[in-house]
Length: 68
Image 1 (cartoon, rainbow, N blue to C red):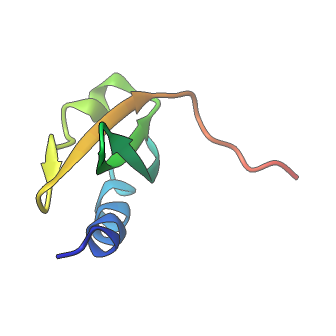
Image 2: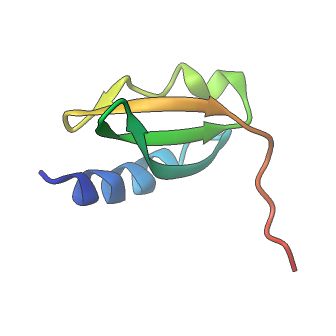
């Protein structure tokens, strides 16, 4: 599975976890990683350290809101 496909699958799955605010492509050193932004500490425990062979990096954030 390539990174783009893994990221799409991660977005669909991780968006269902309460406290996950967003999922994005990131970098861990030289490698692509899946970055997950969370607003709740409880969400961190539900997120794996890898997903389809790619590292998952969790970052604490506030809630995301669309600007109008």
